[in-house]
Amino acid sequence: MGALDAVAGRVAGGATVAFRPSGSSMVPLIRSRQQVVVAPVDPSKLEVGDIVLARVAGTVY
Image (cartoon, rainbow, N blue to C red):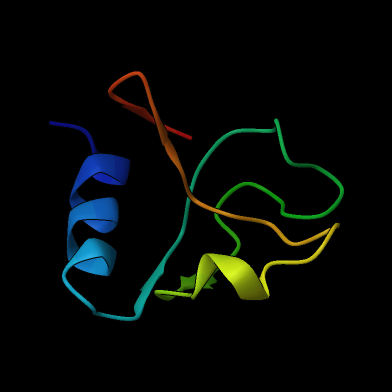
């Protein structure tokens, strides 16, 4: 289980989680080791441009 799996599990359980993801795939929106906060959200309230943590085919992105 990776770090994102643990974060996703806590969020799925209703928690708001702050963490520092590493990597450059989200630059310039999120830089490596920049603190981000993820929280549960009603999917009907998502809008174009929102950044989400999602599990796709068993992998958390």
